[in-house]
Image (cartoon, rainbow, N blue to C red):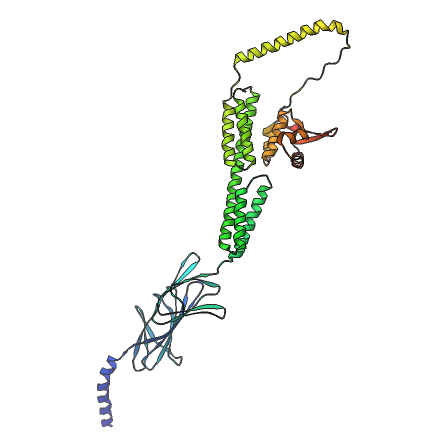
Length: 428
């Protein structure tokens, strides 16, 4: 018995130095699988070859933060491991292959919709992307591409690699179609009110052409630009309409105050502003209307000498007429006296009341009302058509619109329609 113990002791003395020298095991990578999830986490399964005679094996891991690290041998038995700065140390004595499974979120970054996977591998790897992911770019030409179980995978060579991908890629075709319809509806609605949207219409047609060519991203951008251009144009039209109304008010005020000197220039500018508005040149119409308002404000009453001359001429004409009637009346014989005619009462339209109660009046509606006001509050429909050079159907719709708004009333006189501003809008 003593001889056996002595033999074991001597054997131990010889083996201990050798075991101390060969305790650490440098593993050989076999394969690497990475499964990427939609939240940026990555599951890593790393297969390495190990020396079964070595007590421990150092395995370098990928990423800087690890969680749920599990190591098994070739038979599926779990092995103990401890973490170190660049990976783990596994108690690998007797194992020929090690399978290291763990999770890390330090390999992916996100920039907007774009995800980026960056990793350096010692061996070729297989990367499986999340559900609905689309590869945007790759740092290297892949070894293989495919789909397994509805998930896309890519095999990449060893080395530094980057994969750019998008999760939940939007349906650009549907978005382009929606943007085009949205722009089309807005443009058509505003055109129906008389606003000229030629530039926006051209942009919309460009978007529709791009859509037909299946260039959906550019089609969507063009449609968005079309609507934005239409919105800007509508804003310019509204601003021009307001300035034209203000200029018309300034001209009418100058007329009522007798400030007619220089007023013809203001009226000419106002007419030019209206013409520019009709063809859709809204910024030019606004500037011209501002000029018209300034000219109307600066208009002055005629010189007193001219007024005096006018009064003298009127007095002389009245006196001459009286003398003539006195001379010819006896020869005409006695006439039957007649009742004096009813005095003419001018009508003044209260625009402030109309515009306050009807804020959504169109520019052409306001212009027709101003024309009626200049004609003692009334005019025949044919006169309105001739004054504004309107087709019969257009004039009819405009008049019907004012009647529906209870601003004017229509009276039939023979075959003519007399359009008259309602009495409630007459100034007292």
